[in-house]
Image (tube, rainbow, N blue to C red; front, side, top):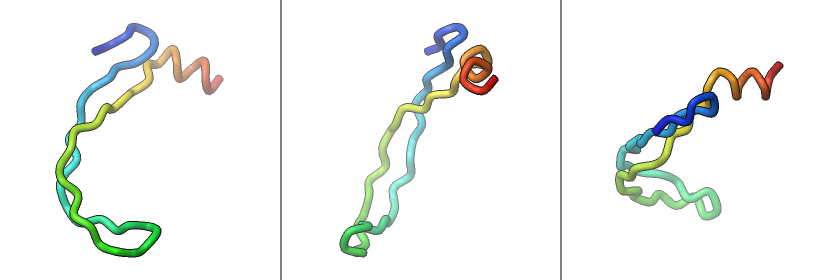
Length: 50
């Protein structure tokens, strides 16, 4: 989906694998998952970073 001048949204897929629990240091298995990816459009970037 794209909002002209604002940016575009897409779906990204993260791989499954081992990750570390930052609190305990324990290794845990994380399943693959889909997440939202946002890419700002040029007009939005120009307004945020003149």
